[in-house]
Amino acid sequence: MSDLFTIRDANDADMALVDAYAAEAGMDRIPGPARVRVAVNADDQVVGFCRLQDDVNGIAYVNPIVTYSAWRGYGVGRALIEDARALAGELRLIARGTSVGFYRKLGFVDMPWADVDLEAAEEDCDNCPYRAECGPAPMRLQP
Image (cartoon, rainbow, N blue to C red; front, top):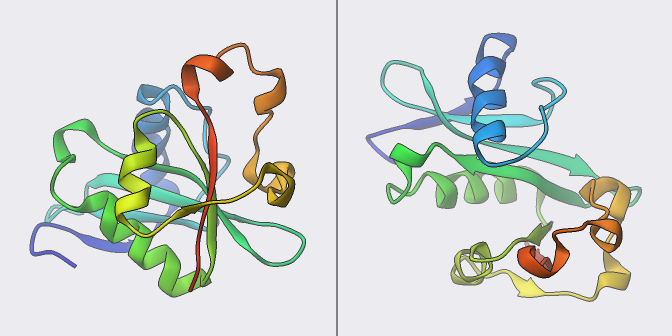
């Protein structure tokens, strides 16, 4: 982990910052603290979060993972992925744009779209007007 932050389960009091960080990243509101893990600083303030969604086979999808902009570069995203992997085993996600390189550094590999559970991933990339700009890439990380 890090001396700068710890990771714990999210609670209702965390959700205002979680939603603000999601909005800053252009994402929708997170429906609640279930299956959300937060990285918190020494003052117990959220600096990043990761939400997991399970598909019908029990495979966890990361959706989303967000690090507050001032905390990028301190290992928050890496630590959240390592935490999620320890909790869930195999992880899947739809990487967007420049984040593909980050996930590859963590050991994620490309996977076919046919293997993606779009409901668990909460993605509708086929109908998204920003698909070409986003460059979505389905990826997995084996346990």
